[in-house]
Image (tube, rainbow over all chains, first blue to last red; front, side, top):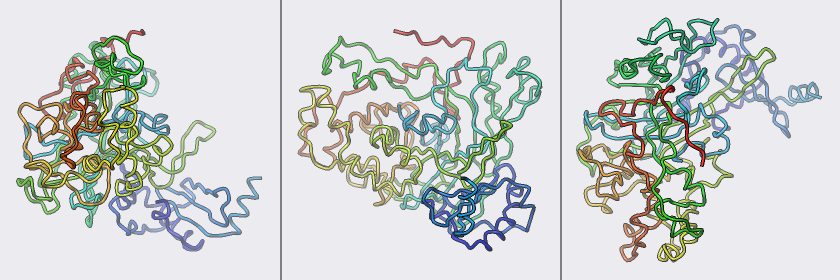
Amino acid sequence: MDEEKMSKVSRRTFIKRSAAGAAGVAAVGALGGTPAAAAAALGSKRRPAPQPPGQAAAQHVVAYVRAGSTGQVRVMAGDREVVVRDRDLARRLLRAAR
Amino acid sequence: MSSHREAPGIAKDPVADNTDLYAFVSPDAPDTVTIVANFIPLEYPPGGPNFFEFGDDVTYAIHISNDQNADTDLLYEFKFDTTLQNPETFLYNTGQILSLDSPDWNRRQFVTVARSRKRSKRVVIGSNLACPPCNVGPRSIPDYASLADAAVHTLDGGEVVFAGQRSEAFYVDLGSIFDLGDLRPFQSLHLIPTPDAPGVDGTRGLSVHTIALQVPKTMLTVDGSDPTDPNDPKSVIGVWATAGRRKSTIRDDDGTVIETGPLVQVSRLGNPLFNEVIVPMSKKDYWNSIPPRMDSQFLSYVEHPELAGLLPVLYPGVFPNLAGLTADRADLVAILLTGIPTGIIPGFQNYTGATNADMLRLNMAIPPTADPNIYGILGGDLAGYPNGRRLVDDVTAIELRAVAGATYPLIDPSYTPDGAALVITDGTTPDSNPIPFLSQFPYMGLPGDGFDTVPPSPS
């Protein structure tokens, strides 16, 4: 099910989307982030409309490397998760965790 | 316990724990359907100073499927926002709460409601609607009923919504069921016999947090029509409720909690007792995380429920016909996973297609009953469970009887149910709880107050 929700994007695409998502969080107001959830629940393949570039550094970002993962980094920001396939990035995160 | 603490994971997260789901044609407004989704199990009314409340970090949702495919076609989402009037006090209220904007009510909660439909935009239909306080006690809240009435909100789209504390509607003898199924009215027949005694309502006097939604029927049908023909597939909706949390939680050094990522479903409820009684413990958390359309993987547990094997063992000689019933339980599959097709029960169907999916199925063309039978369809009342679920319905007895074989003749008329299958009960009724249901929306009874609630007596 997770795989259905996630996008498999390049690192470059992720960086673009990451910036776009920052403004998206503020735009959804009291029901922060639920358009994506609603779209998922309703079975829509569409993503929420892209938002203009914002302050990516102003929001918390969580990167998650699953045990045994080979080059896949899951990055969460606001209400979104993107999957980055980048062996070098994953390797550096794992090295930092030692 | 219907769905209170029914899975190991959600038992540790009561704020997101969906305890019961009801869906019925509103008895006093039969052109509407009322859906009640309850959360936070076993609230003990004196439980201050931090009284019970919805989670600001939880997204609560009610899903409706109306086109025979077990997918969400109509979605209502509820998000809460909690505010402090006075950050310098430890008190819930610093004086009497006489109105929903009372300056002496310190910790207040508001709900925002959004509606989404397939192929159309999500719309916020109510913003920052006031919720009532918990029922602290008569000194703090001298007129709780009026205060709570003010938290019933009519929305622009025609829906009516209420979110707040209410008296638990589900009645059940918890102590007997979980003590090796020693149903109190039949203790003398148990494998470890004791003298028979009346049932004890284990949730009596306790509260839950209710999200109640009343929706015009014409907003629920796939084409906007008014459902008047019980045989029309468009008259049937499937309903389930969920709670979701953000995928990532960080507990930072300064005590703050940071939650990011997409929503992950942590609780789900359609038919009462499905996850609790049908699904094995090792799979309950997983079941809570998936949508109903993925329930085919649980088909074997419905076809051969563990409880059907236990009853003849726990009550020796009482269920001989059930003990010999080894066929797939197509009756339970129909009740729980597909709905009952046309031709099984005269004048009734609530079939939602071939997809195996645990949903509460309501045929909206069946009018409400003036004098409901608590055994629902088993009691000859087509307006009761498993046609939706009303607050009065004795779903524990109905499901016990169904599992015990009472409904198997629907698909095999040659089968004779055991006599006990037709009368088995846990000995509780709606009257086991002295707090009455209301005759109007939100129907759930007023919560017991903290000052006057007496704690249970230990044995």
